[in-house]
Image 1 (tube, rainbow, N blue to C red):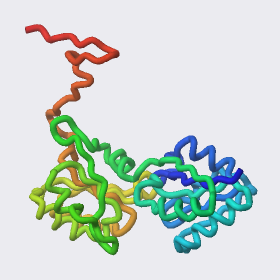
Image 2 (cartoon, rainbow, N blue to C red):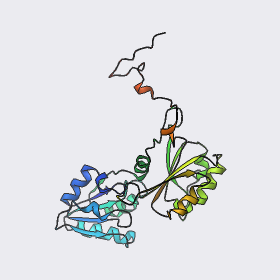
Image 3 (cartoon, rainbow, N blue to C red):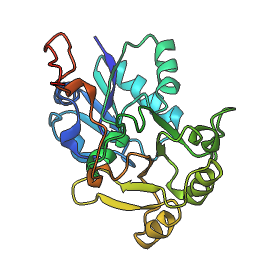
Image 4 (tube, rainbow, N blue to C red):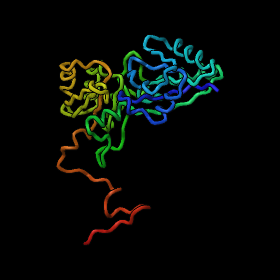
Length: 261
C-alpha cells in the first residue's frame, strides 16, 4: 500500500537523520528532497532503482502533484525536508491535498538547526535560575507575524531566543532586542549551516557587533541566530547547579543525603 512519509533530514550532517528516517530512505521507491536546504548526501541510503528528485525549483502545487503521482503508483514515497517537518516546513500545506486524494501520511521528526547550532557552540539553551524557556521564532519579513509575536514582544521575557530565517534581517533583530531592553553587550551566537561537514561557520559576538561580524564572514543565508542569557556559560566561574543531580535531592532512583550541619 502506498504511503507518503514526511521525513526530517536534520540540520545538514547526513548522519544526524534518525535511524527510522534512514531505514525509510533505504526502502523508499521515490524520494523528493528539498535540495536548496537538504544535502543530497542524505539520500545515500536509497536503492539504486529509487526515483530521486530535487524540489528546489518547484512550487507547492508541483511538489504535491509529484508526491501524489508517485503515491498513486503504489509506492512508498518520501518528502525529505530540512530539520524537522513540523517547524517552518509547510507540512500542513502539503498534507491537506494528500488527505483529499486519500493518500496515507506519516511524519518522522528530525533534529532542528536550533539544537544543532547550540551543539556546535557547546552551549546550553537553558540553565538553572538563568532561563528555563526557549522561544523558537523569526523576525517579520515577507511573512507577517501574528499579533503579539513580534521579536520586541517576545524578547521582553529575556529568555533564550532561537531565530530562524532571520539572518538577512539581522539589523532589525538587533534593534528589536535593544528595544526590548537587552544590553548592547548581550552575547549572540550565529551558526551558518550548523553540522554541515566542511561548511559550518560559528560567529560569536554581541548585539552591537554581530551584524558586522556576519558581514565580514559573508553570512547571509542558512544561519541560526541565538540570543540568550546562557551564552558563554562554559567560561563562567560559578553556575547554579541542577537540583536533579544534587546529593541531597531525592527521586525514584536515588535517596538524597542531607549535608552534615
